[in-house]
Image (tube, rainbow, N blue to C red; front, side, top):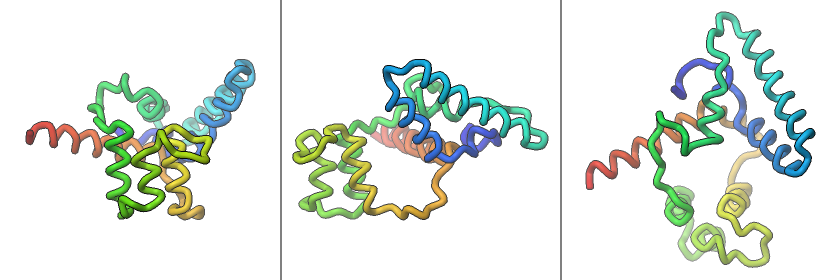
Length: 160
């Protein structure tokens, strides 16, 4: 499904994240949230209608990211925070004793930080390592990566 040509797959993941941050900042302002989300959906519909021959203006690729437990097309990732922390240390080639590795491996005990959740800790570890000039991933790219992770996890279980 991630490879299907739909306008939702072409949305920059950064744009989706910015939308979600705006909604989060206005947690108790329901009317503001409705307005922000309505604007996003209207922009999406206009973009989708401008694509020549486009027959599928579905937002399913976005919903897959927002509601992963309800996605029947993709298996579970089986990556809780601890396992993901170990994987990120390996992928980033960090020494297990390095400051960033310790942050990822022991994210709950990170001191001098307002972030005690894994996503916040991982964000700050990645922030210094990512190029700010990157074109960025699209929603379709992220779904494709997550499909590969889910497939790899199923393969591991089958081999056990």
